[in-house]
Length: 419
Picture (cartoon, rainbow, N blue to C red):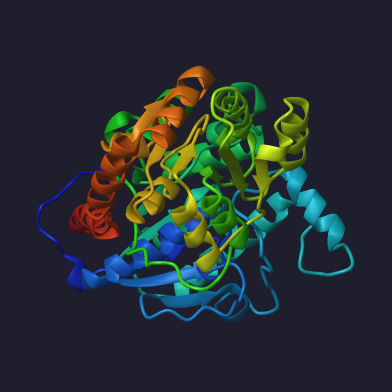
């Protein structure tokens, strides 16, 4: 096993990376695709050449990587048709397959799609010249393993989330996904975790030696000011003198939307001029609507659906406070997006991003009383809001993908030197 370590001398000018992923903008469903784009661009700027492998041919044009697609560069006659979210579990996959049962693009289950991707990796890897293999999250770990077995090149696996994060704890984990994650980390020469929070899970729950795991925090791209005329209702609410508290993310157990709504109930008991917006979609959306009704606050809780582009930016800027109450958050890019646009943030202490930001309010996800108190403070104290806004914006500007790429440069160079 090649030891995973840091080096100070970059060899990026001579290094080519074969990178296996599952999504890439504009065909992405969440933070994983954003991270892949940010990292490939910054690695390109450091002199690396990235060969980014996708399961299926999609309309992706990027100057930062050479895109490889299984239905062109893989085995003839075998195509991985995988417009699949990296956040799907087996149940949600079955729902999608049920809606598309008449088509041929979905395998019998999510794991079949993952195995089909894995099966192509060996032949694909033998056709390319590269120095290091890099695989993002469990959907791509198998492909990375097969590429390593076929070529003997060192393998880096990048853990953006674990099954413990997605399932909400020990009792809900899928043993199949856990097994793929564990195998990927064991066979890798180096494991990259997006936070110390995630590294601790990897060491404690997967049995991976701590010295094999390197922490590389995520970054953020430049966030442009919004334009256009989206989210008109938010503007009307603001003009009427109301405050807006925003939850933006997947409406799933991991993200803690139920704690957000319970805290909203407590806020509204003391301040009626606050609206709570839940922006996103997920398997708990219906339950959260019913919870708002049961608590008697449905007229103050708005569900916007999944937003992108200008509408997403306008929602951030319309909000007086952005809240990320995640139960288990490996990192969390959305608070950085909000801070970059000048909106104060309140984040759970159970998140990786809490390790790198200081000008944000923090709370244990389960402490809805403390969460509500901090919400009330921000919407009720202009001086606090302004301080968080100004300092948060300045801080977020210095948390970049370029910083992440510098650390990855060191890791990759160390592996290449040892081959």
